[in-house]
Image 1 (tube, one colour):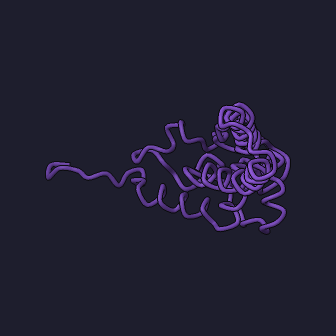
Image 2 (image 1 turned 180 degrees about the horizontal axis):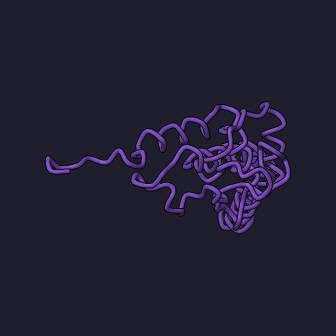
Length: 162
């Protein structure tokens, strides 16, 4: 049985070190970032990172790396807004200074452009963040936390009468 966050192997009563995941060495930073941007596993470069638009797969289909342990949380939206803002705010100011269009025209042009740019960049940026997290050893740290919570088989507390 392979590891997955939804499998019974992740519960405290049944997790076993042999079933947790393969022993993975963190990949180099730049290849991991490129692989993540391209929706490829940062460890092997073969499997996919996402099963939907932003849902990270529980494990790589090729090397079985537990990618589901890499929770990017708020970093990808933050980086996306930061990047899109730095790309589009200077043209907004340039257009305003050059032609002084009415505010409604700004809203008709720039709001959809910001929304489209953020939507298109969010997935590759999240892939890059997952790749970055893989280089920092987050998979090993999460595996160690899961194993520390696990109760080894046969080591359950028994009452005074066995």
